Image 1 (cartoon, rainbow, N blue to C red):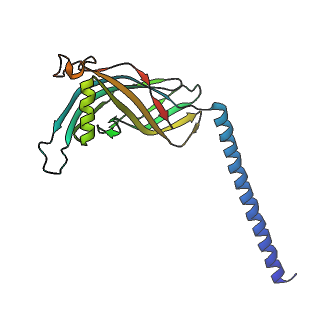
Image 2 (image 1 turned 90 degrees about the horizontal axis):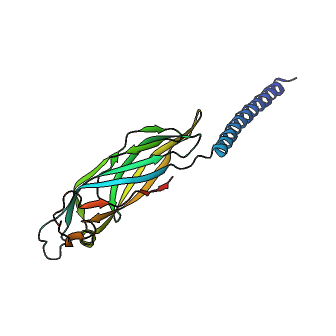
Image 3 (image 1 turned 45 degrees about the horizontal axis):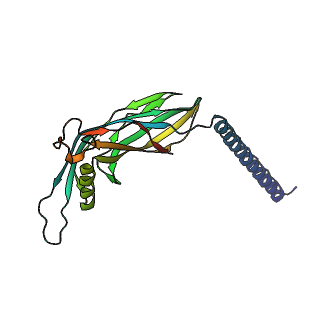
Length: 224
């Protein structure tokens, strides 16, 4: 047997060994993915259920920017402080949920009117209920003229609709298996009566305790 033939034989053996190793690694990966898929299909984790139980308005004040020059827009500024009570329930029977990060903030007609408030990370077993009561606030939020007018009209009419949002990342845990991160987006509509629905036409036009009242607890829209 020539030296060249031996070298070619060794190259063939080496290539055959490489192919076997690659095939083994690929088979192991496919087996692991199949096991994960089977476990996932058996457990079928569902989205957590969120509820807005209460919304207390501590302060809501709109101030003007003064007289605007010719052709200029006059902006208004909103200062707001409120406390939201949000409940989350894990409806899965055999799957836990890690809330690694979650921020809560308030919106009015698509405009964020409070700075995000971070919720503490928590692990939620099955079927646990977790309740948070964060304060949401902001100072001198610039309102476009049309939103300032809309807010004044809503307050005058006696009803104000705001949206409490939760934005964060969660993971599911089934036994020793933990998934990657899922983007959690929660939208909770909150209907507030102003001066018991009488608005600025009532006797309590100066605001104060009870001027804004949350109507009733409601389920939130959850998207993952």
